[in-house]
View: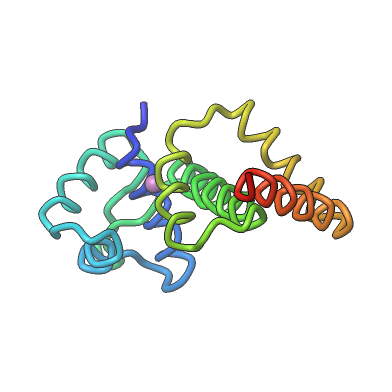
Length: 144
Ligand code: CO
């Protein structure tokens, strides 16, 4: 069972490995704004569950299952951010909300939300219609 924090670590390690080919404790610590000692502790936990493994000259690397999960976490984060961006949520609120939502959404809901993003993004007229609807609805309530 993955905790929200384990999910964030897997996502971050996945990102670092894609970017640089490795994920150092110091890089993980600075990108998640945590102490290196917390990173070491978490890496031990992830190692126990076979999501990461220690290689002599490379340091910690993701196992196959760790990489699959890390990739899924990154895609989930990206899709939810796209959804909120599409709804024109300001970037700072959007990032904080994605951090909250991503760990508490079921695979079923996630899959339908992804369809919703596709539905609007595949046809700009749909998105325009949605934006107009929101604008008019917001205008109505604020002018009452
Ligand atoms: Co998160």
